[in-house]
Image (cartoon, rainbow, N blue to C red; front, side):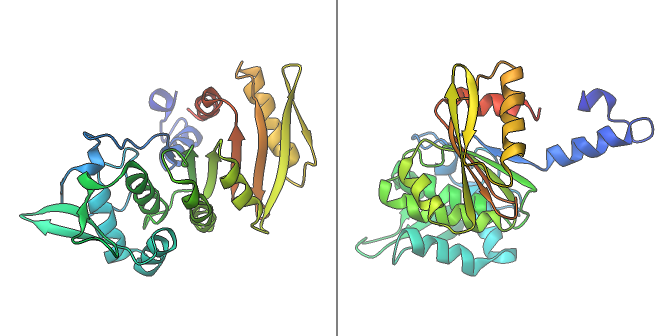
Length: 255
């Protein structure tokens, strides 16, 4: 509809909505296999908007250093990997990510990083973008991460929520507990009862979240959420779903 009706004269409202939606970023899955785009060298270009697949990781990292919050970037690395430093090397106009840490004889490039380390570095880059989106949706960011990284991941998400509205789908109880520890988060539990989503302990944002669950149900999504968390300024939303299908059906509401 947005591509067919978005006329600035006859349908300016649709055009405005289309531009807003274009500004949203959905990070559904970061590949970390041997052929994953982030593992390879990339052309050095200014990258103020991090790609959904992380292919421009090294370029995005260097861009954050040059025009973003370099101090926060290094702090996020230190929080997850004490004593480590991530940098970018340049060879004939191509960028390569370098990961240095105490105990390593030399820095490791992206091709040599473990799946978990690479994924976490990708999340750091995504959440420190120089141009934060109005809405950022994260699907199971805990995938392939060591459990000890989940508290740091929670802090990373809370930091990102100060600049964007963040929605996250997760199945990790330790990540949930870390988010609950943040005083700015208000828990709202939803439970499935005879194919209906019911809630208990809903706070100020409860009716809004229930309306979304009802919309999912009307579209046949059969919401099966077991907990939602909401920043008290309504700028930070975290959704915990039992099924991956719920996330994709949730995104379908905005397509």
